[in-house]
Image (tube, rainbow, N blue to C red; front, top):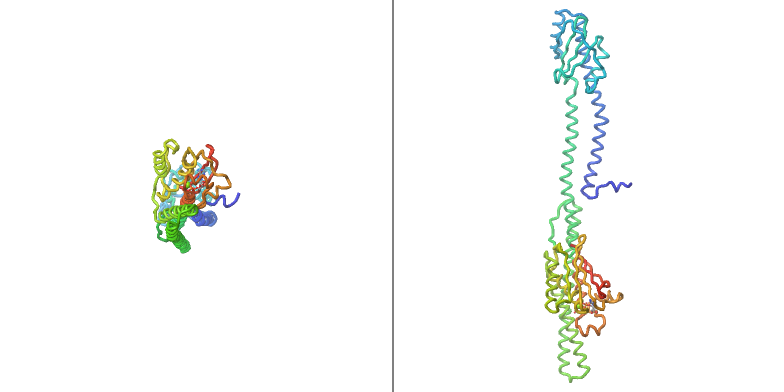
Length: 440
Ligand SMILES: Nc1ncnc2c1ncn2[C@@H]1O[C@H](COP(=O)(O)OP(=O)(O)OP(=O)(O)O)[C@@H](O)[C@H]1O
Ligand SMILES: [Mg+2]
């Protein structure tokens, strides 16, 4: 039972509640305390006004009016009070029943006034003529019928006031709705941009708008993103430069080796130089692609299929691919980089094992790709090492298979860059299971 449980979840809802709750409370207080008392007293005043006028007319008529007296009263009533009067000679009246149902409040107040003032029996008729009220008074020689406008009992300004109270609330509500929507929009933009940065997707700078603080946060975010992107680009460029520069002394060493008389030592040296060159080439190839590729919306299913069919051409039947029938959702990615990452992982499975299975599934905004194989696997304590650059486990195995030890490092880098994750497990097939998780 906390206040938090009752609060709206979104900022928009909260801001609306902050405006509306006090407003509604004020309106209720206004209507139910001040306004009800005001209406009550206005109604009483009007009822007692009309009541005393009727009382006066009846007094003027007297208990046994003659024709002349009646004529005088008629004129008096028409002139001063706007009443119409008729006289029904010798008629007998059924007295007013105070317990009538469905009598409006103001008419009931009026009946109470009449009851306390009139000395003769009387009744009120609200139905015969709509919008008019008929008061019948039993005199000694007949019934006098007084017709008055019903508006005399109802304060019309009361309704105007009520209308304005409700109307202005609705107006205020709609205005607040419009303005608040505009205030929340830039915050949502900022959240989306932050999310895209995390997923490694490109976005343009958006037009900053909204409150000063929100614009400030937006600007801070935009310049942070520029700095991050610049730093990434610079890091890649620097490492590419270093790798490139390393090749010059290596080439010189190779030349010097060629001039020396060949022996077992020179052969070993030559092999080391070969390996170094391979490593540098591998890194350079990676660094060149990095940073320049733009994100585009692409299909992971297509990428997996093309890797699969390329592998099918070389050695058939060693790979199995399983993609859900409903397909995988397309999402923005650096397509060539993504293909490269998956190629590296699947390539490992094919290289170090004899049979591998790829399964993809889509659950709760994430795509999972499992690459299982039946090879030797990687011991738990070596899994963290395997993704480090230039690390190759069990040299002897790799001598035969070749490779620079960059594959998993590159794959990991690319997948992290897309906001995803790479993890290792034991596969049911006996070898290694690599799980790639990618947020869509
Ligand atoms: N599916 C696998 N089964 C068993 N061992 C693996 C598997 N995948 C990777 N490894 C081990 O992890 C090491 C690092 O893999 P990584 O892909 O980074 O380098 P590499 O395959 O040796 O060289 P590269 O991929 O650069 O040609 C490998 O040398 C291998 O020992
Ligand atoms: Mg590899």
